[in-house]
Length: 221
Image (cartoon, rainbow, N blue to C red; front, side, top):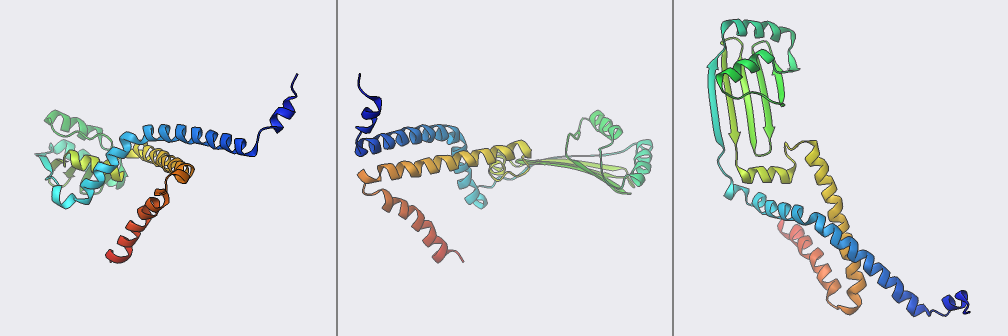
């Protein structure tokens, strides 16, 4: 029966190197395609919105605004005015006011933040690509609401920036960034593994570093 130890010792250093290289190639290819699959849609989104953000002044759309105005009943205004004296500062939106707004068929607050003062209740909720606010003048009883929709381009631009998108999207951006790092690092390792057979590998990588560096040094002021 052949000795296993002798068989192992008979493997030449070149064969061991080839086996190690083959193992690393398989691992890097696996992680590279997994990370690229995870990043694909996100990279398309961020690449396209990178273009729209870079040309925001040229393709910015005008916000579509929906406004409404009304006047509070005296009894409700008096109740809210008394309540506002004790609630100066941030607080919850009053339920009675929300029910009255719903009965008028206008904007009803959901989420957002409410600021109380002696003469005004102000609610606002900025969102990706849109904003909404309600202003209640407790002296005159005047109520004003507005919804501003800046369109789909603004919506996706805000997703790119993480502006008014909430914690879930913020966590997604962090996870997406980690996947992109994995994609780039495995790509760099694959470049190194294949560089011996592709003479243009490192000059191309160097050009990818040099071009933006030269633009920063000579054209950004």
